[in-house]
Each structure stands twice: as structure tokens, then as C-alpha cells.
Image 1: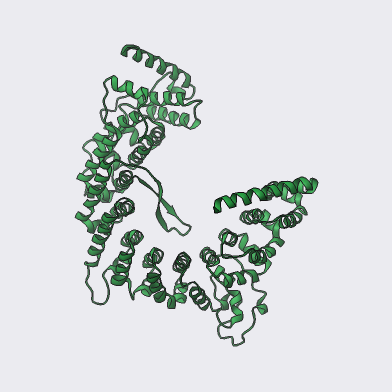
Image 2: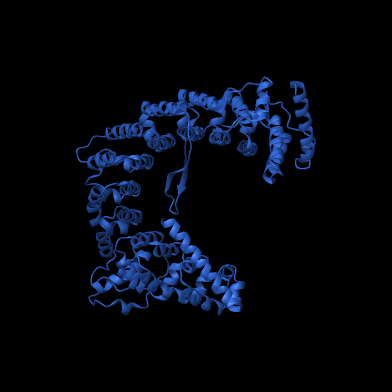
Length: 634
């Protein structure tokens, strides 16, 4: 087939497809697209600011205002977004539709990328675009790197485009892409375009990192160059951390650019260590270098520590302590602790932290860095040193409300199998339940509520009578604290979980129900069921009390989850006992918005009407679960 015939065929396909999709695009009709008249700027409206007003003095604004989409174009691309969301009958239909839309995008790339709603549509298009379509878009935007990368909408478009690299890495060119090359429309491949962006960022490295949106692109670029995509995880209390989401292979040219860009941090290390926005780029760089170039990561960590340590020389303490109390610098130091090796951690402790941990634990910001140091400890020797310095101040830490320090100690005790019994002893002393010995059995309600013995049981500190716990049966667990639940989960995984287990088994049925029906407390039973150091007999002692409230658990959002876990781990006899309690209120459960799931999953209707079939099904389920458990164990 000749070139002219190919062009004619493509034109017929475009007309046919637009006719089929006309109903989806509304007034766009028969292939009608946005007018391509954005070469001249719209002088009637001011350009969107590419950077926050506080940074305007540092960066010169673009000479010409950014082009805008007219209302007709906005409507067209809105309908394109709706069509993409509806889906297509086949990949061929989707490919044809996307190709036709990209033909309409031509000439409007910059306006679309910097439009608030249009950029969202463009991101959806890029997720299904071919390599050729993506490269043509980036080729046009490469003439406006700064305007796009420093724009609040354009930055997200650039991130989406860069993160498409793994998708095209091992993908061969399609027949359509080869036809486009034959038609004389050469375009750099995606690797070359990313390298061109690297050159742009290198020339204005500090400016890109100081800009809110430009920093976002630098961080994405570091991830793509290293082949490591990171994910920001935030817990309930707002603390965040970077974890690896995916990894992929990258060419040597990317790794070379990664090293060159990372080397630029040292030129303005003071800015990157103290500037809130610029610091983010260095944090991501440390994470990816730790995986791809550990030696360069270690060198960068040393440079940062050397700079911070030299700012204010004091004979009393390290100047690094000042930066530990700064929100921006402390976050950077947390990343350094995460990626440091054993020798670096020991050197950090000896030079900067030793003798200062208790004071840092009392600080509202610095205590988070101490938490990171505890979790980063990789040897029993270093952790024991940290533990010895912190354990005398455990009650003061609790009084400050810095429970993250306590849970970090418990987590590392579990991980390194070190100082576990001593931690339990110090916890009991801090909660005033170590002496007399009869109080020790009350420790778990105190841990879960984060209340001392005197406050929980309302006895008063000056009371001389050492009454037994049984004299305080009126005390009830009202709620479960998040950190208290996390602490107990770690204690149940200790090599000797008996102190925690005895106290948990000594709790009343109502208190156990309170734990199971709370969002934080429900996870305690996950630890109870999965701990390798707890025997089946010990588990049954606790769970037997909880089964009394099976109906209440079945009706509760979190309790039903606990009941489901107990059911899956139970023998036939226990399942029959639970089912017998539930069918007493079967009608109410079936009408309950949460309980009806339990009634269905446990096949309670069959339990009542077809008991033998129910027993056979449950036995088969138990065998299947045991078989999978054995496979996973092997």
C-alpha cells in the first residue's frame, strides 16, 4: 500500500470514528474540535502566576501570558473526559478515539496543560496515549518547560507524562507510529525528551527546587531517573513517610543524570537543608540514592551533617540539636537517619545525640527525630544504648503525650528481640501498676486507655491501702487509644507475651467487647490471632470471653471484622457455638445493615435448616484454609 493510500485510509477512519462518537461529545458533533488559534496570547486576561507571590522577586515571569482555552474548547475537552470515563467497547475503538483527540490537541498543548479542567483531561489521555502521542506533546511543551513545570496544573501533567516511562520501556513501536515516522514527522523518543528536561533543570536547579510546583517536578524526575517510584504514606496522627511503590529498569544515561543532579545539592546545601520547599527535593534524592547509589547517598548525608554541625559551635552541645527543633531541618534529618548505615548511625549518636535524648524527647518537634533514630537502630548494641538513656524518663514521656516514642521502643524491641522484659517492667512502673504485684494484672486496660492506675481506678495517689484489683470492678474501659492499641500489638508479639496476655485474659467480657468494637482496638485481636509466641490454649482463654458478645460484634462495624477473623481461625466446635448464639437473633441480624453480612458469610440460614450441608461446607472450608496455610508456611 502506497503512502497516498495510507493517508486516505487514515482520513476515512477518522471521519468514521468521529461519526460514531458524536453522541458522546455532544455539540462537538462530527469531528468538530477546539479552534487552533492560540498562537497569539489573549491580551484581555492576565496570565496565571506560575509561582507563589512570595517568590516573584526571585524569578522573572514569562514574557508573554499563558494562552487560554476558549469556552468552546473547554466544553469539547470536558466531553472528551466524560467519554474516556465511560469506557470503550474495544481497545481499537479507544485507540482511534484517542488518536483523533490528540489531533485536535495539536496547537493547544500549552493552553490545555495549564488549564485547570483541561489538564485533568490531558492526564487521562496520557495514561492511554501511545509513545508517539506522548512524545509529540512533550516536544511542544519542551519549548515552555518553565511555564509548564512551575504551573499548578501543568506540573501534574508533567508528572503524569514522566511516569509513563515504565509503560513504554519494553514496548515496541506500533504500526501507526511507524507510519507517522514515514510521513516525515520525526520526534525525539521519550528517553531523549527526559534528558532534555534534565538539562533544563540542571541549569536552574536551585530555582526549580525553591518553586512549589517546580520542586514537584524535580522529585518526580529523581524517581524516574532512578527507576524507583515512591509513595507518600500518612498515618492517623499525620506523620508521613516515603515508601517504595514500584521499581523498573533504567538506561545508564538516566543513572548518570541522577548522579549529576544529586551533585548539585552541595552547591547550595544551606538552602536545601533549611528551605521548606527545596528540602523536599533532597529528601526524595536521599531515598532513591540509597537504593541506586549508596556511596553517593552516604556522601550527601555527610555533607548535610557537616554543614548543620558547623553553623553554631557550642562547647555544651552539638549545634545539630538546634536544627532538630526546626520543622524543616528535622524532617530532612529524619530521612538521613532512615538511609544511614550502622556506622553512620553510631557516629551520629556519639557526636550529636548522646546525653541529649531525654531533652529532645520533651520537645514537640525533636521527639519525632528521636522516634526515627530508635526505629533506624540496626544493632542490639546501639539500641541498648538508646534504651538505657530513655527508659528512666518513660513516665515523663507519657506525661508529655509523646506516645510515638514508646511505640517506637516497643517496635524495635520486637524487631531486634532485645530488652523486651525490661520495657514491660518500665511501662508498668510508668503506669503505677508494678507494685504491689497484684496490680500487674491490670496493666492492659491502663495501656489501652493511657491512664495511670490511680486515675483509671480513681483511688488517689496518697491511698495507703493496697487493695486488690477485684475491689475495683466498677472501673470500665471507656475507649481505646490509638497508641495504646499499637503498643499492645507489639507486646503480644514479644518472645514472652505472658504479662500482656494474662492481663488481657483477666479483662471483663464487657471491656473485651469495647476493645473489639473500637477502630483502634480491633487490631489487637489481629495480633492475638497471628502471634507466633501465643499458643492456641492461650488464645482460647481470651476469645472464649469475647464469644459471649457475638451478636453485638456482628452488628458493629469493627466488631464484625474481629468476629470474622475469629470464625476463620476456629474449629468446627467453636463455629457451632458462635452460630448457635447468632441464630437466636437471626431475623434481627438479617435486617441489620452490618449484621446481614455476617449472617450471609456464616451461612446461618443453612445452619438452621440444613445442618448437615452446613457442617460439610464448613469442614471443607477448614481443610482448604489449612492447606493454604501449610503452603504459605513452606
